[in-house]
Length: 402
Image 1: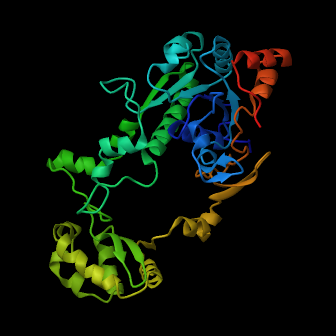
Image 2: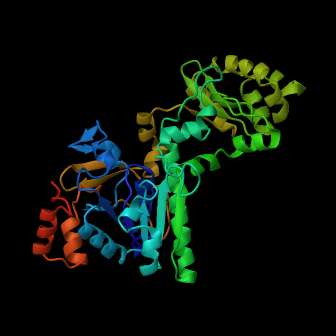
Image 3: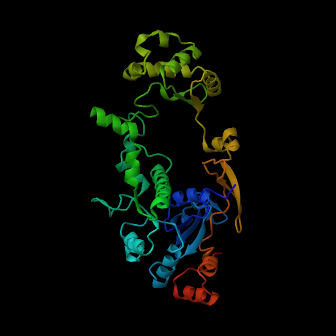
């Protein structure tokens, strides 16, 4: 058994906030060595995104930056640009999410670097991509949720559009970026050359509109908000129970027939108008209120147990404390801890992939700003202590982490 599936892969991470750091954190979980390059003047924006705090460390920052080391470089300084290129010479992957064209100002764009480092896999994440009329616009998750169509599908049928409570555009862009990086590394094994990866938040958002977008492409009819329901399947939504709420996902006609039996409502199956999903979708407004009345007759836990016993997908609506205490979540090690040299024990969400031969693991706490600057410059790039001190005086690098 080796340490990690990506052991030996070295990633230079110039990204900040969410999409890029989420991407590199996942690669770090898989064993890649990630060096997080930060501006000495405050570092990653999320370091200041609190409360809540854990001994001065913002929870937002902690959630995205495990399994990394931090180096501070003032990229406006020529000597910092030289250090960046020295680090790139040792790296397999470089990732950044600055505004389109920014890295070119520092001589760190792909066109410049690939001539000297042809094996580098270079990933840029921006709001709108490197091409098109909006390439220069800054990208923010909530704006893309609105502009990219997600908010038009989310929220009550009668009422305003809602954003999703998690920054899902950033998260999925990070997932697409990690997928593309792994593909580019695999391709490099065959060709010997790296390549450029252009990831746009807007592209990510549009891509996972999936069936909602396909519905329009097929029918020419724009989707309408369905609240907690599904535009293509009925019943597939949240219902109020005697003591709370339940979510039910009836994916086929057999499940629907069994649900009628569990609910002691054979009439809702005997009625031919409700025996196929297509007819149930057509008669949604007639059928759903009847099921809402049914679900109000029993508590959530009783419904969940009875439905699951008959292989009908159903579950409670848990809040975050409920989720993190859930026996299945605990069994899957989705809540773990890591020791921080200054903060102490940090509880964290665990990695998702469970690999049999190269397990994912949390081996490095989210780093302090510039925590590893001196060690990397001295041990890996062979700068002397005197040279490092001079770089610090000149403003090319930041002060030591505290």
